[in-house]
Image (spheres, helix red, strand yellow):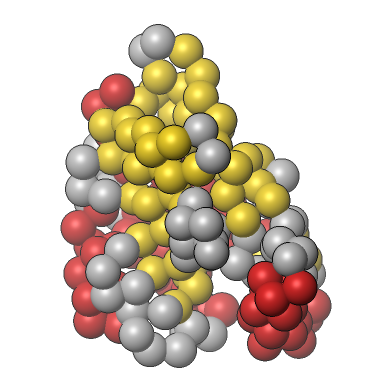
Length: 171
């Protein structure tokens, strides 16, 4: 499983935040839209029914803190799950034609995400909602690389730009 921005990408699925918790709660992005499994039960929203999707309360850290803390974050998340303490919570706020909806998601990076990755992730979500980005590109990458280790920061940012359909800046 690989973490890319605010997403946890596996060969089979793309999650916002962390993969499913022990109780099965998670938020999954699919070709059809957003699926949530939480204490309120399963809910889903099609991409066409959404007006916006934003992750709030994202823990952000500096680039140096992020690099030093990635392994520690993953270990902390595992230990926290074992001890009953969860990773930091975030809120996925969805605006639909019938009103707002909120879903709690858990951060996969217990010590925070890089600011650039968080912003690019938000942009990707916005473009998925408007149809300007193709969810299939994220799924295809997951099938090919989702079982690999999490790529480095530059690769993650390049992937987020690619998935959002943005040009990658020159070095």
